[in-house]
Length: 67
Image 1 (cartoon, rainbow, N blue to C red):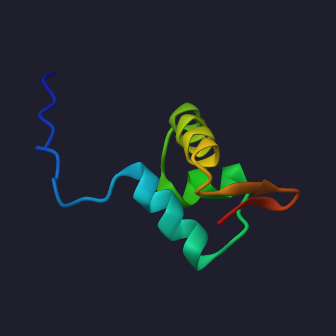
Image 2 (cartoon, one colour):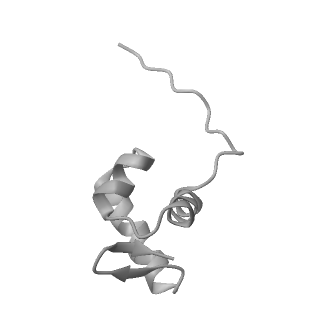
């Protein structure tokens, strides 16, 4: 079977932006909650969370990730 995927949507927000948007609407969120809301792979989510944290864009709290 050949699976043909649609071309990437250049207007679609990148995962970084989607995480920041989700945290802006409901913060703090646990990693599992973010993964479900964004429908993203757990490993990829972890990489982006750590990147945003290192940049100072988000912070980790006992209740989850927050802006």
